[in-house]
Length: 390
Ligand SMILES: Cc1cc2nc3c(=O)[nH]c(=O)nc-3n(C[C@H](O)[C@H](O)[C@H](O)COP(=O)(O)OP(=O)(O)OC[C@H]3O[C@@H](n4cnc5c(N)ncnc54)[C@H](O)[C@@H]3O)c2cc1C
Image (cartoon, rainbow, N blue to C red; front, side):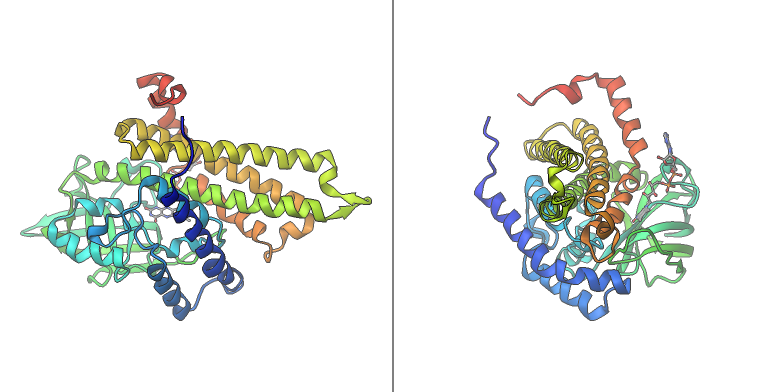
């Protein structure tokens, strides 16, 4: 069993680490203290993403992406996940379902998104439809050769930065016709209702959007009427892997900082790491990070080696659950090891502590991941989680 990373993958990780440390970290405090970055800085970051080749790492080269394997994407996301304020989000990952677009949609949406000329935001969640997407009420009513979209979407991440939205709506309100629509934000009837503040500082906004009689043609349907849920499944797998890798990076950065601090901070005449209470925390952090890394790299490798889609879906839930909860525990201990300094916003550990909290909520809460894992256990048995690839 050869677990060594190929040179090309090591190179991706090295470049991503340099990008995080040299381009993203210097922006962290400015973002934290002012709550947002000026337009000019965001534009500089966007240019840096292209210059360093981190745009669309999740798409093929022929549509303007980087053609990375899943493992390479994971290695990059781990490094970028070390940045606070979700600065990793400046390196865009155009939504996976765009691959299923028509040639015209690929030319008009996917390619410009990979190149950084356009940006999408994803609008699925609603006031009464969070974990339970079966409750989605946004509808797209057929009127002649057009669809009229009406509804309300919440938490639309990067909705402020996006120029188009991928909107989940039911055609004619029918539950069996969940469908994705590509809606340009400038279309009449698209309205920003609110941009609430959240626990984390996030480089972009999370908007509440209203769709008031928004008219679009057939050409704006992605993948076909009724395909909405099917298309979002693969997307969730990728998003869960990305979140897990970001969590891993955040945990590693906090661990390194806490480990270093524990060696330098002297109380009662000796470095605090010499107190078993501190050293046991560091030991637990090391162990959990090692376990998460092994799990995440393994599933990324399995995807690259063509493992069955349903198996991947179940394992992506397990790793998102484990990595996000691991990051929460590691960050909590890191804050504790820093004492009062761990509670200061100028300390990356404090910011990461807040940043990783949402990873147990978005792209399926921890409870929903357990629901998925439990369902798979019932359907396929324990081997899905206990077997090793042969
Ligand atoms: C910062 C942020 C950004 C987001 N970005 C986006 C975005 O870009 N696009 C988008 O569409 N959405 C986005 N979301 C929405 C996110 O995906 C939802 O918040 C999430 O799916 C949970 O839905 P909910 O908030 O309605 O909670 P609810 O579904 O109401 O859940 C409340 C609680 O009940 C639990 N629960 C629900 N059902 C079950 C069950 N069957 N078994 C056990 N427990 C259960 C949940 O785990 C949770 O603890 C974002 C959310 C946040 C906070």
